[in-house]
Image (tube, rainbow, N blue to C red):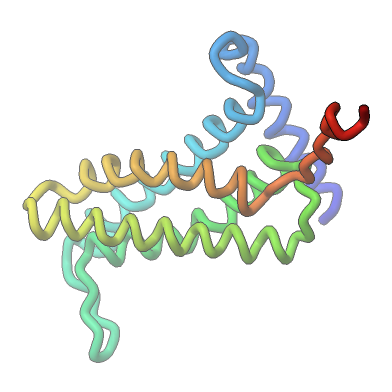
Length: 175
């Protein structure tokens, strides 16, 4: 299993970093890796959402006993359950690999940020689809754009934070 992990991590890093020179003038490596990994996982999420909504759920309400979930929300939740683990793996080992936090702490914080993202997704999807009457797939794409900014900042500064170097002594105190 360890060999598979090292092979997967190395392959992903080599592939992502191969394209980095094109974007080097515009963004730092970590931001590029986040964009590449997050973009790939997001595209995977949207593809899953589209397939689940249109073909698996067939745009029908999902009935789970006494609970009824609209197709666009059910598709979102199912797709999330698939892309959450891949997103955590990519964030932990490819994008934010220098974090000093324990994996359990990283996972818990990543999960908390993901829950916040779910709430933002839920509210915006309900607004766009149910209130404004927009089509579900474009609504999901627009919602994703809002969530990306929140997610990146939260993951970078909360879930996978690095130790901050101690501040240098104030020169007035030294003299």
